[in-house]
Image 1 (cartoon, helix red, strand yellow):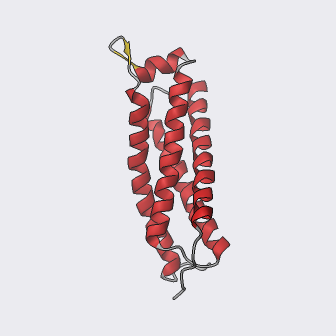
Image 2 (cartoon, rainbow, N blue to C red):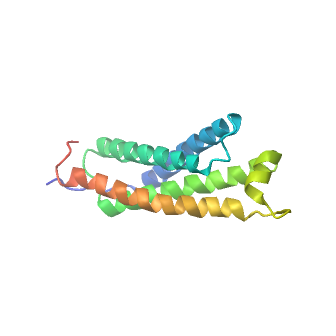
Image 3 (cartoon, rainbow, N blue to C red):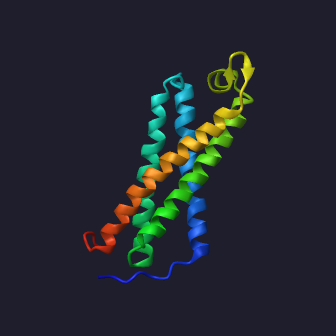
Length: 154
């Protein structure tokens, strides 16, 4: 069985920020492409945010394992992926809120309820992303266990 390496907290924070910004960039690209093709009213397409977050998270763990040369403890992988998702969805909710100030269609779609402006929608997007991040972090935790158990080679 492999031994876990001592993982630097500073490097972990840097990876969380880098991959959080990467995830948020992908969400913004998806959002803007939905806006260009008039697909924003189909809320089910937001599921593509979670699919992209899932794929980038698996890439993040795989890259991390290859860089350090040993496995990542399960709880450490869970926390890293969860905080990456929390940061990315916090940035995305801020983007949605700022973008809605300049685009009346997005304002009408997300923030206008019963004739008055409701800024709670961006908070709901953040908490929805937080829940999705929790689920994806659990999946990533099981994925990182593959390296610990010797199922996958480093």
